[in-house]
Amino acid sequence: MIGFISEKLTGYLLKRETICQEEYEIYLFGMAQFFRKILVDATVVFLGILFGKAWEMIIFLIAFRVIRIYAGGYHAVTPFGCYLLTILMLFMVLLSLHFISWNLSILTAVWIFASVLILALAPIEVENRPIEEAERIYYKRKVRVFWILENIAILLCMVLHLRMGAESIVLAQATLGMALLCEKWIHGDVRND
Image 1 (cartoon, rainbow, N blue to C red):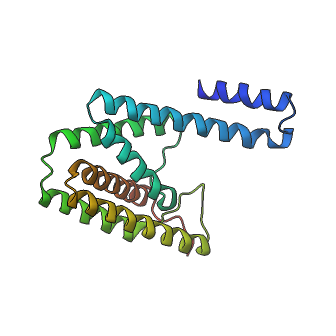
Image 2: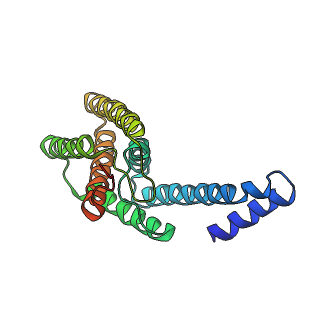
């Protein structure tokens, strides 16, 4: 469905000469990515509302995406596989928010574990997107900046007694840490150092 809509819209742009033939594939890819993000965002909001955790899921998604852009992590082979893994991840987060008693000890332990994984593994490259050393340094710096900002947000949430915000950000970091660990475990380090 996403492919069909993307093809129709990109074809329309080509027909109206808004884009040229050489740009067709780039626009097609961009449109498909755009609609996939909309689908994921709509799913996040829908599941959040369904489980009475809409704000938690929105905070989770923002915190996850901010670092994931630079950190990398496990990527599914197909877009549909990616969507299914995303849904599975969201359900696990929702179940964690609903069933785990997030006392300060558990929250701190998960936070430390996630931080160690992120700082030790990020950025991690994948086979179809190798990164050069200059990019690696840049991405590592970005990961650390966003990690620090998220940790400040966690601390502020704790001070302001907004526990659900702190839990959501910690879960985003933990999920990212696990995505990094999975990519490293499954595919190893693809660098040719």
